Image (tube, rainbow, N blue to C red; front, side, top):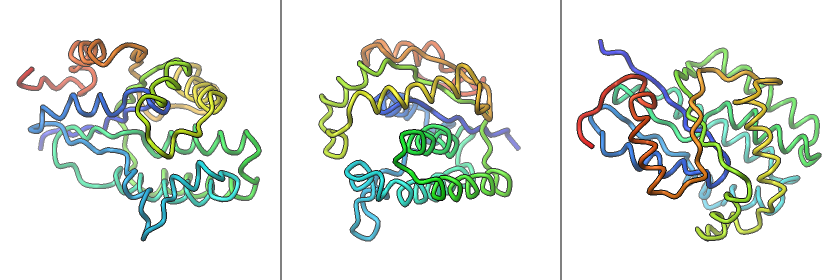
Length: 219
């Protein structure tokens, strides 16, 4: 049997994760793309959980993160269709960045935080949440805010710079400084402050690393 790998693309909101996934769609023989399940988050039997979380995180933050854990676990544990499963974010960034930020900002009560952490610990020890590589798209918060304004996603228009700065700090603590939390896999850091055209050049240059040493056919 050929070895298979799970690569998680991590980064702040609007850091360029979708662009990276789109770039590697041209290698369907070896790469399976697993996008963040935002469609599910926007329509849980008619309820837009993502919008509600942004509108009132103190009321909906824990419920949203609970559903996010469920949907991300589903992506992690699905059998590989190709040698490389390329995932947009992971169960780990949900816990170490987004849940942590809600709690740090006093929006999430201690009980909600503790229960979500218990779920996370159980999932990561009882399920096959394998990660072989993390690709971190490192981006300045000011660049992220400009991109968010330009792409005009309705749920995101209320996001302030402070929120992006806080999430940036948590990504840095987890993936660069490795202080409070440890990454579950080696980390490849890419400067994602560039234009899409320049990012495509970086993806091409680093494609062998991103795909765990596999050399895809095509350009």
